Length: 186
Image (cartoon, rainbow, N blue to C red; front, side):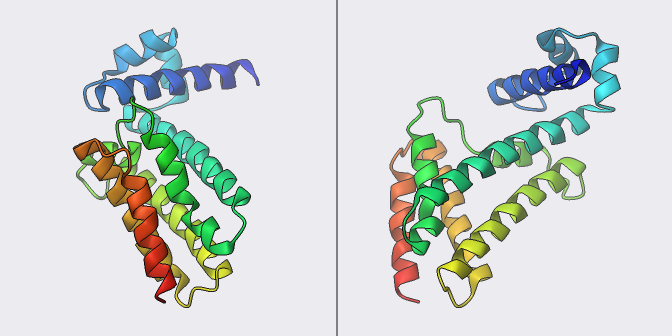
């Protein structure tokens, strides 16, 4: 990794930590450059705006989360279990007492304008997950892979909301069971 890449990574990591702990809107650019231990001008050499930095944080988290999802799906034996692996991943995440909810949902709540570039990054992430789930649904020979993917993702998102709002660490298991029942009746 080059020095500029390392600096950029340090800025993204510092911002990600602050955003998780405090919320995106509550964190100022000054806090970010101080936490990253870079000059303000260095931060702006890498990111033209805070929104650009937020989008970079979301992309990094998206890449990491999708890689974990693919790893969970890869170890599942049956095609249907690969499709349900999203709930296994969520169950592991929900077991962490520090779990604060989906970064995407949390950030989306702070950016209500659907045309905002940050919201576009969130939509891109959700669409990437939908595409992957549709591939898994097709491999499981579901008759309507896109609808199946949307159903599974909706259940996963609902489980994440239940985990945060109700403190229900078992929400992913319930959602997995519901998805399995739905898939069995198609």
